[in-house]
Length: 369
Picture 1: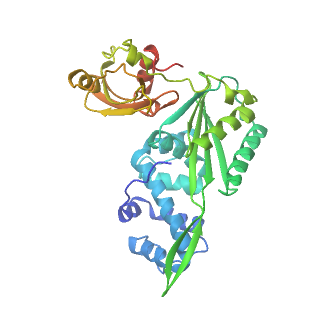
Picture 2: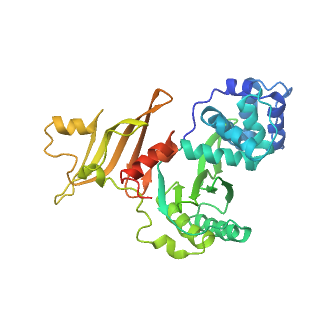
Picture 3: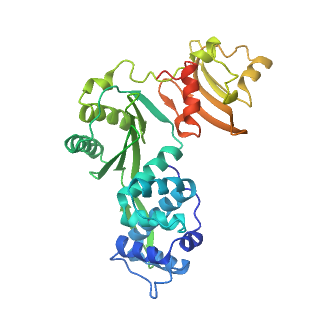
């Protein structure tokens, strides 16, 4: 899940239409204690609502709801509009993004999840892992039920609760699966009068699976590596009908940095890509202690050439590379930075001009599929 971005409560409240905000409280917190004259939706009314001890749980829910809606409005307005179009929901283009997102959240939750899934895909800082899973996928109800049960049992066995919501969407040859699941219970102290009481809750996490039907590639954003492995197993077994896909020897062979080391990579680009710079590199060097060396600079290749490190770009095994691509789009220079961690991780597909960059990486033998 992306980290929450800064939110100013007063600005957020002003941005949401008061009718929609009132609807939020009536639907999300019907049994909570409400301040008197709670129709104008000023910041002091929200503060009063949060201050009531009996609203401690509702206050936590409210804070998380507001932050999620604020996040997607700061960095994912286009995904909100995309959801309205995808689900054919009428919208007023003069309405604020916050109001549009809040309306989706309380009245069209599936559409909001759709928008939030794409927001997470493009804004979660963790890198996507990519896996070769060729075959035919089925999102039929019986297949999805089996997949959902396996994932729910997986988290339940880890003492992360039985709560697990799996939703899926189809769009332009891509199947998108959003998985909401629990984590370990946390307990926080809070004041109730002159005594300290405790409130326990189970935080929620969100993971995303995207399956490119054309290339047969499963891309995953998962909270933990072990969760990712379970997703791969259950995806192959339940949705593709082939358990062996999870154990293919070439399953994770998606990226390689060997062209950077053998001199075959073209750093000059093409008609769209005008220049490429390596800004960070990690090397696994030979030796009894298996040393790992990391170098960061404005231009790693130039640094290795001019400084006396005792080795060059072809030393040992290159295990990490961060690139900066300079593209010329509509007469303007665009900079795009991303990393590749062989054999299966990269965030290049989350960046602008991903198709141009991906095609170039494939042409240069860095992207294998």
